[in-house]
Image (cartoon, rainbow, N blue to C red; front, side):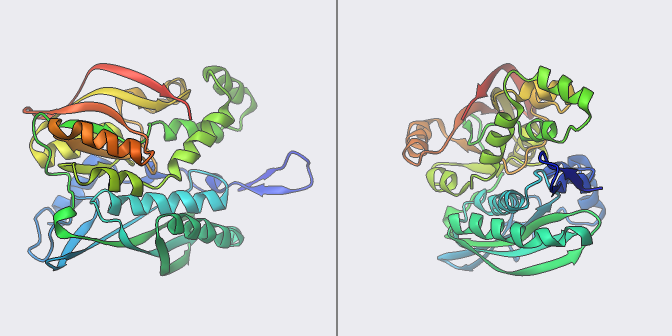
Length: 346
C-alpha cells in the first residue's frame, strides 16, 4: 500500500493520502463530540491567566500593556500526495489559527510531524514545504518533534504576537454586522476527486465535473497554500469577530461564532471553487449547505455596516479575495436563506 506506478512505468510515486482513511481537516473530531469532550473534561470555563483560550482558535496571554502572546497547535493527515505541498498546506493551516485572532507578528512554528516508517524519505520535503510557507508569512521553524505513526500527519505549534487591543475572537459579532469570507469553499470535494483510482468511478467523477479535475485540484491547492496573513492585516482594524474556516465547514464555524457571540447568523452567499458543487453532490460532502470540511480555508469575519466600504477597500489594496456572505442577526443559530452559489475560477 502507498505506491502508485508512474505513467512511464519506470518509477513508483508515493501517495501520502493512501496511508490514511481521513484527509486534511476532515480528520478533526466532530463539533458536537468536541463540545462533549471539553465538557466532560471540565474545560468549558475561562481562565483568569488568559485573555482567551479554550473555545477560540488560539489562546492569548497578556505579557505587557503593549504585547500579547498568542499560541495554538494544529496538525492533520495529508490532503495532497506531494510531500512538499503537504508541508505548505500544513503550515498555512496551522498559522491560520493565530491569524484568525489578529496575531501576525513574530510567527514561530514548532513542527509536529508523524510518518510511517516507509514514508520517512518524505520528511525532508514536508519540512521544506513548511519552511517555505512560513518564510512567506515572515515566520520561522523554531524546532519541533517527529515520531513514527501509522497515519502520516504534519502541522505545528504556532506562536505569534500582537497588541492586546488588536486581538480578535469569535465573541464580538453584533446584530447588523456584515460577514465576509476570504477564500472560496470546496477543498474537500476538489481533493476527494484526486483520490479516486477505480477506473469505472474515475469516469463517473470526470463526467460529474464541468471542467478538468486537475484544474479544480490545482486551484484548491493554490487556495490552501495561500496564507491568511494579508487578509488579517487588511481587516483586523475593522472586524468585530473572526474565525477561520476549517474542519467544521462554513456552517459549523458560523455556529461557533453565533453561539459565542449570542447572535444569529444568516448566510446568503457561498463562493465555491468552480466544479466542486457537482463533485460534492457525488461524494455527499454537503458543500452547498456549508457543511463540507475545509482545509486551510479563509477568514470569516464580521464587520459593522459603517466599516464595510473601508474593509473592502483594504482587501482590494492587499489583493485579498473576499466575498460578502451574510449578516449577523438578533436571533440565534445559523440559517441559509435565499442562498446564492458563486463558482469561482482562479
